[in-house]
Length: 375
Image (tube, rainbow, N blue to C red; front, side):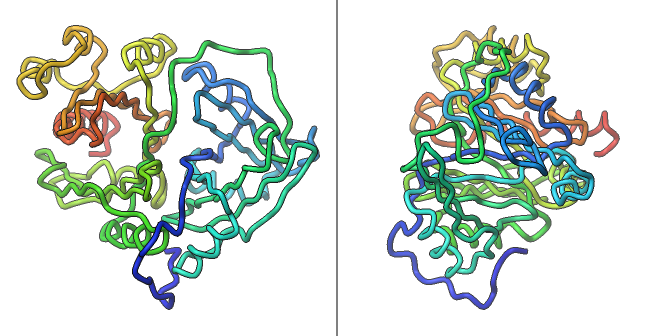
């Protein structure tokens, strides 16, 4: 665990860690060139930047792709003894870095470390003809890290060490806008520990809590708390297993990822019907709830703008809270290990996370677990 138990957690009087949102997500993958092709083809990401031997980086290659405000960095090592290979061997392809935009990366590092974070990267200044970027980082659950990125004095492609990249292959975009939230899975009894980490070390607050009565089926259960930074730009739900008759989806994830990690990335769209139609046409597989879900949909959520028949055809889920409603859908895992998947979400006022869909959704997840022999 990446906590310093000797550090005291002072009372939080201010937002000592103001965040500008998610800067980027870095995946460690076995073949970055092929992974970039997949995310471009299937999700509509666009070429943005590249670093590798051609730019003076000898030990790894990184392809940076972008859609809306979402930036993915796909990194692969070039030699078998590289430490990134240890991560891939253990976890498979997965998210290593949840990078957060800050105004002052040095202060972000100092404030979090003095509150108990374990340092991952001391403040580093990088510069080129386009300006300067400052980065720093801390450890969080499992082998996942947070990178703080200060880019107010930089105008180049991504960051120093990278060059603009154009492969000549540009599939149309699918309407993805920004990262809505990123969900972490942790082991038994660890959820509250990591929620306290986000509260005391990073100044987050808990905005929603779900227990095993909210998130359970006949066979399995989990618990979840949603942590949010001060301005609400960054939200991290944290899941842990709960007692059930059979293995929960969190247990399956931890078994195959070999520890805690990022379970899914929720990406926002302004037109979920168009986005999902595009993704389906490109081969993305989604979880499906039973058709009976739609028989009483309007009774549960009230009037909505969309036609129920279209939602049923695409398998879209709807939930309402006091602020409005949301539409959401979840992909199946995007790799052979049943670990990382994506959520597509459109918010029409709602600020919640689809509590009314949990039972139907998790029953569909259990069907997939059963097909894999992991329930």
